[in-house]
Image (cartoon, rainbow, N blue to C red; front, side, top):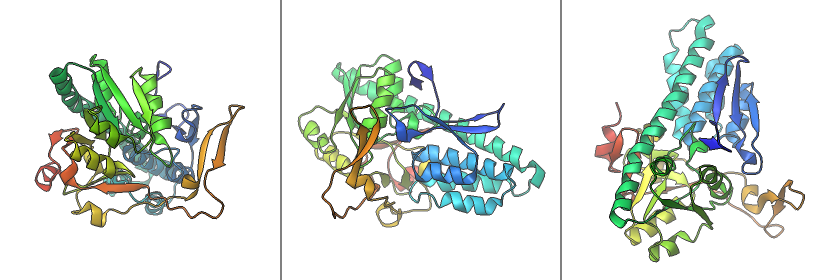
Amino acid sequence: MLVQNKHLTTIWYEKNTDKIKIIDQRFIPFELKIVELNTVDEVCFAIKEMQVRGAPLIGVTAAYGMYIAARENADLKNASEQINGTRPTAVNLSWALNKIMSSIENINKEDLPNKILELANQIRQEDINNCKNIGEYGYRLIKEVYEKNNQPVNILTHCNAGWLATVDWGTALAPIFVAHKNNIPIHVWVDETRPRNQGFSLTSWELLNENIPNSLIVDNVGGHLMQHKKIDICITGTDRTASNGDVCNKIGTYLKALAAYDNDIPFYVSAPISSIDFNIENGIRDIPIEQRNPEEVSHIEGLDENNKIKKVKIVPEGAQCANYAFDVTPAKYITKLITEKGIIDANSSSISKLKN
């Protein structure tokens, strides 16, 4: 998508230098920083410390990490296990690693780097194509609302499920981008998404670069806006979707779904098939919830008076902080899932048809 009218993606292979390059998302919106990934340790750091984030992008990054491992003649099983241990919730991580490992069982050792690079590039391109398709299907939902009301469509989104969470286009934001390109007037309510403020720092930045009207709100405003008919639809992403339709997404998603349900507002989840865990039957019971560094809660980053990024403490000395990164929204609160193969019900029957 666009950054200052220039098209960028979040990760790419630079053939002439044999380098994997990423946007370091920790510095957005204040700085656009491109970094190289040269070792498996650097790939693990990028995923764990959220230089890259978002389930689809984590999967693509893992695939390129396996190429780096093969290029360095490392033990691929150990490399896969090391990368897989970086973050527990996003299923795309294990999905991409399993796809790589199962595809190279009969490949000669000297051919492994080229084969894995081919697979990683394929996974990357598939992600772009899938997100574009999600955008086209989701656009129809936005168009229906516009044609019914004949006024700008107000959409609430939570966290960042835009192109920064994928390779390009995004999941939850893809329908918004497509609607905008088709001249549907829209306005997006952007949750701050504590504790890392990914709505404020990432989603708003994406929308501003595409000239899409948006308003930033703190996390607890959504219910109020719904009660007063200021939101037409909600669209979020997902880090892992269970086979029964339960959706695991950024912490706070569940509360938005409850408010939408109580106010008869459609709540859609953009769910690429690679984010569906067909082995998990009950999301609340079985999806592992990552607990991150408490410092993400106790401290906050921003620009100081000298335009330097600064971290400040916002809690009393000695305060104990818990930092649950995700929650699970039961399928009954989800209106539909938007996948690259179409819009489906959030239930076992519909999801099982996507397995093959």
